[in-house]
Image (cartoon, rainbow, N blue to C red):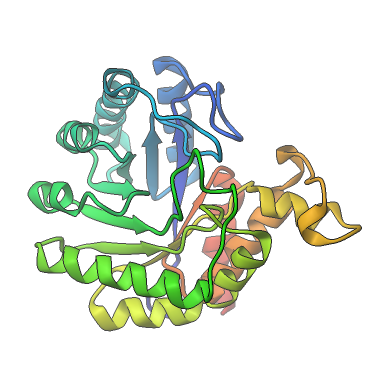
Length: 279
C-alpha cells in the first residue's frame, strides 16, 4: 500500500441468527440485501457475506443452510454492484468448498477463509483469498489458547499458507493474523503491536497485503471495562465497543494494513479517508 492510498474497508454482513454482534439483524434475504446496499452508500470497498457464525463456541451449520443463506444475497448484491456501485467487491466468508465455489460463481471475487485451506477454490475461480490464523475451531478456540511465541507462530503459519497459495496460482493473497481467533487479550495486543512486521513479510513473499479484524470483539470490551486483572474482567457489552473498534482499525492502518474488516462501515470509512492526507 502506498503512503497516500486509503486502506480498504470490508463491511461485515452476517446472514446468521447467532453471530456475536449482528446475529439476527440481517438474517433474512431482504434485510441482508438492504444492509449491503446501505454499506455501498456508506462507501464500503468490500462486502463480506457470511452464512455461518465463527464466534467463540459456534457450531457448524449444514451445507444446504449456508448455501441458502449466502448465495441469493451474493447474487442480488452483485447485480446492485453492476448497476450502481461498480467499485465495490463482494467477498464470501466460509470454510466450505461448496459454498465458496457457489458464491464465487454468483459474483463474489474474494474468499475470506478462516480455515486457511481453500486456496484451490480461489485459484480455480481467479479470486482473491484471505488466509486467517486460528488456533482450533470456532467451537474450541477460546478454551485454552496457548503459544510459546504468538507473533512468530502466527507469522510462520500465514507465510507458509501464502507461499502454497501463490504457487497454486492464487494471484491475490491477503494475510489475517486472526485477532480473537484462539487468542487471549495479551495475544491480541501483541499481534496488533506487530502488524507492521507482518505487512513487511507479506510484501516480501508477494502478497496483496494484510487485513485486520478487531471490530466489536471481546478483547475490546475487556479493555474498555477497566478494573482488576485484564484476563479476569467482565467485558463491556458489544454496544460499547465502537470506540475501541475505530481506534484499533486506525492503529492497523498506521501500521500498514491494507484492509480492515468492520461492522461500523460509515465511521471506519471516514477514518480510512483521513489516513492518506493526514499521514
